[in-house]
Image (cartoon, rainbow, N blue to C red; front, side, top):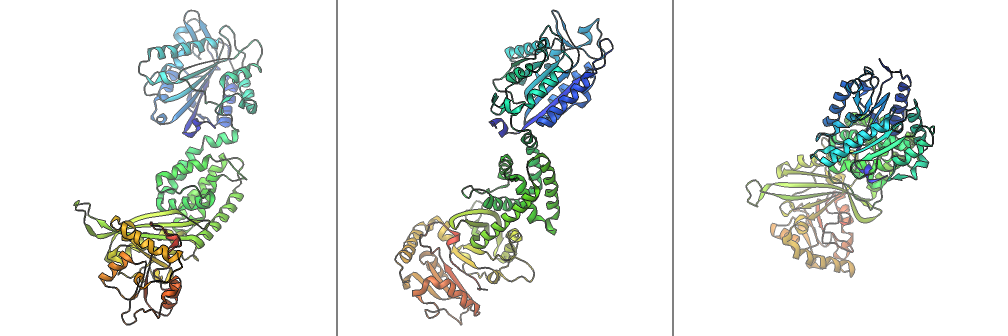
Length: 616
């Protein structure tokens, strides 16, 4: 498809005609023509039929009032609007005057005063409130080429005058049923148009960016009509190709003309809880798309990702956008979010009607398989990272730290055992120390809500110096009788200051050298590179943060840690050894920097070793 389809395009059809006359021969075939045209454009190409009150035997007043009002309606602002205006009935050319559409009450002895000048169909477009992009007038009357000429002349004059009206920038296309001096045979134009468009594969070769070339279409139509009647085509306006008839399969056309509306509906359903929606879309993308692609970080990016999924073709009975909706439904089908799940189910039923080639059973089965894959990734590579930083006084613009702390919570998943991380969840919050328990209970409940029950994620804290002495054993992420975080999850601690404070840049580089030496030389742990003892003093903590990669202390002054508990030569096994000590009711804190064979000066959450946990 061409670039025109990258933005929302709305297709409209106005089809009207006159079959009953007071002073002219009746035209019963007009009703059949209108039915055929309505079906061809709405069912075949996704056009929306508008102004149905004009359908049969419209009056001059109706055409002059309803059509201009519709063109100026605000609903048509802000989108690319494509319009086909089809008229079937009698037409007359008055020498030296112009072409007229003969209406039911037209007086045969006074056509100029009682009929509608054909150029009046285009006159309302010369208005700065009209935002139609392209219009195709199909004039199915006798002498219709004269009417087409009147329309083109009017547009040409508007362009020459260029009165700062938007109408001068609209592309006008006109298809006439016959030549200027010929009479039109009833039903010929509508049937030949249908026959030509049905041969969509042949037309595709003669197309512009995925749309039927109208000149070639008329050539094709003339091969299907009597030699005494020739369909004519004219165009004038901005330099662009006609985008009235896409050449891609009609099944795709149904989807193409509904997908933006469907995207908006699904987005509105998911936007009820934007945090959950970001989790759902990023977790889906992690297992469905190429891991090299990136996650999204805000709700504004969600709608663009939905558009991207909707543009992908059906493959093996699966539409990516409908698959994502089923992915969401599976996780939301719980008491708390049952209404959202049911709305998604309703949406899915509507979407399937427009997406040929999909099978819901196949989609449901594959969605379950993807969730299984995601859960396995979580078990192997999942981690929650909680960065706590001192909040700065911005209200008084002092630049000083306040009594509040800022919490930034992210959920990461590793991809294919690589270090590259996928941020599938992010939430921010402020709290005071005395409200720490309540704050942590509120900050990430959604993460646990969507994770499988058996998963016990590793949780990594980056704590500022002011919080390093605060124990994490009693913090809970769930209310009631649930155990504290130290008993439920492995907990890791790093220094916020060391990694995020620019004043620590030089210190950070020095510690990097220590870590490289430890790993690359398989060195024993030198006494100057670690701390073992009881709860450190403020001075000890400052030394730990500023110079040591490892520190371990007992929170019980009567049970201090010694080199007999943890042998320095076995420093690589300290995390596991401390787990054993905790199982024996030893309350121990372990500060374990990002000790990894190839350490990075920035945090690498999946590489950090156990820092603080009760080991159960």
